[in-house]
Length: 207
Image (cartoon, rainbow, N blue to C red; front, side, top):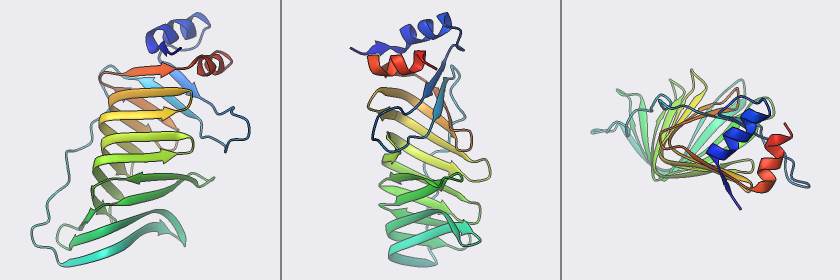
């Protein structure tokens, strides 16, 4: 039986844990290590990512089946594979179709995989945006959203529109979600609903 987040917050408050904070921890035997993530509910909602990407009217270069790499000193931080690409030198943007993003986070190089119908890549600014049918995975977590923005200078990811984050014992749904890549913290806003199984509740109470 699933327990709604309001009941869960009351239980956590009773045991002295800060209201609104849910800590994900992986304790499933014989499963790959799962990143620890903190989820907070923000009544005002996280800072929203910008709307869908810019249009490239007159591309300088057009290509098919491409791969864009981002990194430094021989290390790949993220890469985007796409079916087609249009590059504008003036705008410094690459507009891609059917992009697949693979990113490597932290010293442990934890892998994040995201795919979508369309995307926009700004390699110079270390930013990228994906939209339409965004789905992905991060360890045991499954992600979905209408749009995905990564801001390299801030080490932040913004998901918006029908956002869902799930793993076998817990799920969080909202209209917007901000992720601190370094701190592994998620701030959800707008119509937030969290569901947790009895097994997941036991894990939270044991923190």
